[in-house]
Image (cartoon, rainbow, N blue to C red; front, side):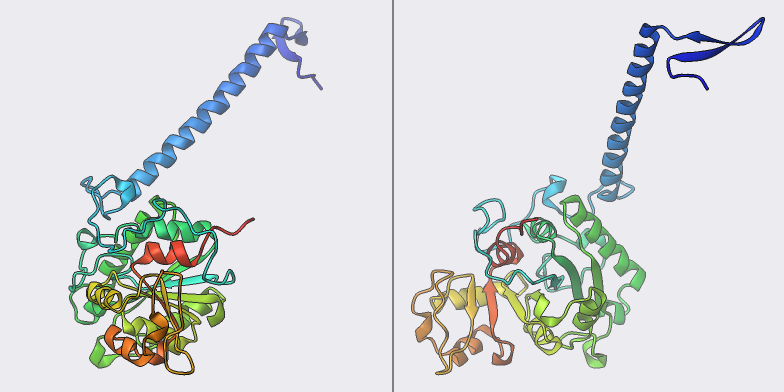
Length: 326
């Protein structure tokens, strides 16, 4: 066997071993180090190219209107609360054992204009939603999207086209550092609804089973009464109603007219009045009749208690607090 400091040489008398000069050893070692660094740079460049390709179509146009894409985002939040703007709360209002966050799509993740999203070009992220999902990912919460999409049942688009929209959504969120672990959709129309279509609990139960959590370990964030009803029927303990949906601004205005400031926990006391809640700085909320408030907000009492917030960024920022320590 030859030592590392020697190399075989074939001469006239056969194979002989000559010592390698010290300078040659140093040059060989330097060449090895440079080759390794070049490999690392190549891998980094390849990863950057793949991430860029994930966010672009073949024509070079951005698929999803994300803050990380550099395009201007339309403001949809009425609160001005943004993750990173005002910092994170030091105390989580949502229990730390919440392992799965169920998200409605339209009005929570993307802007809801009251019509169906039929192509990736029509999918516009709610401002701050991508960053909020990234925060959930860093806090080790799994995220599952549960969405009614009767546009498939009506024949407006195919399931393959819907999967393309969702694929772009997942890749766009990934560019911002977040992960959507699963997407569940109900293609049936309201007149032929199955238990999977919200307010049915089917999709939520399906997601919880897939991710091996129970209702006490899950939270539902949605923008409609159907989202809250579905969560209640699925046994999801924690419910959050955002006001970033198509009719959300009206609900937010009505809440503030009553003196309620977000975030606000809508919870009924034994005497029928709202519990006092000082998280959002609300004054006099404990003097409001719970039934009247629910009627004004369009929320049935059976879904209480629930949190009322402006949008997904506020929900994540105030309700989940700082990331858990490793």
